Image (cartoon, rainbow, N blue to C red; front, side, top):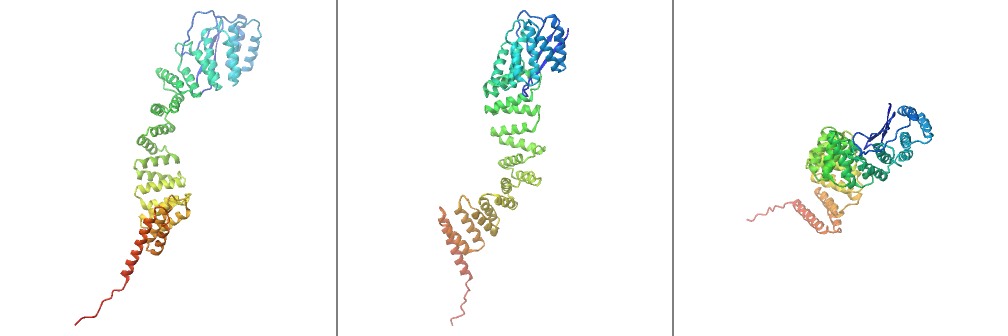
Length: 442
């Protein structure tokens, strides 16, 4: 007695299912399904392959195992031309043809052949007949025809006492692809549970699918432990970043920051967006020096682009770290790159806080010239202040007088004008020569 296994490898990265039909020649034909499940069977009459076709089927099996599909097809055509084939002989011919079509990526042909087996169960082993529903479901799944895949899979489920994990995953993924996440969830959970009960680590694709379902349902608390399993069993940077992202969604920024810091310390964070995210997190945690150091190293290593966003963030970190002098250079670069004059005004104010009045005046003028300011009147007042501190009283007075026309600025501007006039008068008085009378009364 010879035996042949017909393997069908379903094209689903997430499922990776494997279905086979086991055919024996030399007596009663029989079939078995995947050992992960047993079909409900009852006593039925099973037909056998006729004696005159045994050698043809054995030769067919050998050519098929050798993947010599051309010769296998020749024998199939010969068998199919035999008058009065019984149902099991026709079924095995269709099964071989279906497998050959599938191996050639002719999925329409594969479905057509496999469906021929489902026309009638008469004379067929129940396990073999029932398994064809699952095979057809898998081929439909490969075609991305998820509704038909579900229909045939559900018919197969009705014949099973204990369906395997792969079957639940196929149904779960089909529901997912149809965006029916509520239906997908229990099937994927069941598939993973059955796999774990066998003592196996859940497949990476399965955990990813479960994680994606939770994301679609905005169920971040349940998504988090799934991502942690991925980190544990399939440690990858992408899963660590995903965990950090969930901490952010759950408003647990300290945990997100700690995870990013750990990845940075281990050399895992290497690109610009990751360094900027870490620096921003550290700033939100008041870790200004760390943020500034990370950004500086990013510039020095050439990882951070010398653009407006990065210069501005770096200057902010330095300023908050009270590194006021050091913060000036990146702020100047940001001001040059900005599409408006707002950062020049910020630069001018920083220079004023350092007592660098002439540079402050220049920066504020540049900001006013570049334009698009949120409050031009306030910028003009700042310009007048810088000029006043340089004792450029006439210029400062003219600047403050020009500020009077801006909404909400007239009071402050007039006060400045009066103050300048008083200061000028005071200075003139101080500069007057002191006259000492020499007349003495006798």
